[in-house]
Image (cartoon, rainbow, N blue to C red; front, side):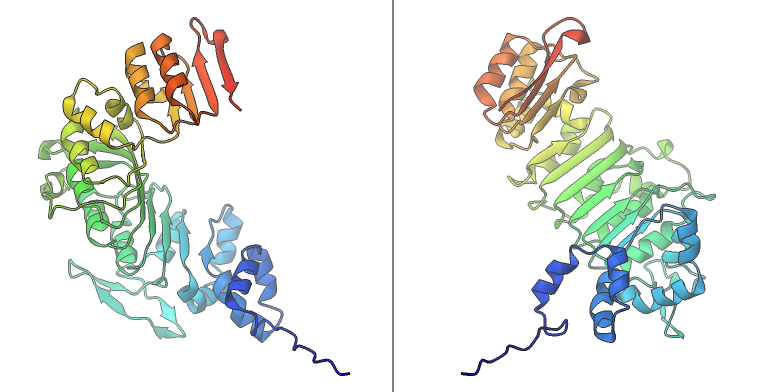
Length: 379
């Protein structure tokens, strides 16, 4: 009797989905070792090794990355990079397209591109990014990297996540996030922004699922803005009525000059029923706006509150026991409630008992000083 011996599987014959599953468990160091095994392994692993340009925590790592051999490898493999994080001035200058920089690929010029303002830029090394994170930086010249940031975003139309931690000139940022990221799914503006917040929200891409505005200030008067800023951006008109039906999470902090109803209410109504999470300091305004019929209607119709209720939401207000009870009733999905230093009375307690079936952690003040607070985990 003879037995057929199945051929041994090699890296080349391994199904793609299996290879992808294995690679998920490999570190950058592991992948760097894999590319040295053989030519087949090199060809299979190089795209995964270069998929992410990590954050360089130490100066010695940046110096090593800036060596000629490393830069040659970058030029050769930049096409595989999908996630890029920029956190040092040297790397901002290295990675962003500029009017002076010429990026070489295979010893030949990569080419140039013309922007909307007729400025000529080189085509940068990265054109297939899905994630771009620009970390906080204070350059010697304010807004020094605005053109390069706008250009790298323009040259990567398939971006899905964009985080901006470096402060940009308001008109430049407004144009960037409303005109050049049509496929974006996650936007995180960590840096301060001053301008027409209503126009910014209403003109955000319809593809967005998550929006985080960490520090915005609503300003529409030209006199309130630096003289270098185009006043058209401060009072920017809504270009077209957009409906953000795919938006699932909104986090907004800052000063809206007591115009929450005019700025946020139309935007939230345009989000349909998909918005599940609304966080940030502006959330407290909505939580305590029961005296406003319009606000109350939207709150009752849209169950967009998250699972955690924190006393920090009310740091600038003094809610009554009745107000807190209504807040509890509006959020049917609370799993964590932390109301230390808030006035918790019988109405609030009753609302928790009657409405919070999913509650896991309860942290409230029984009355008096902090030593009387209690934290209970509910099984």
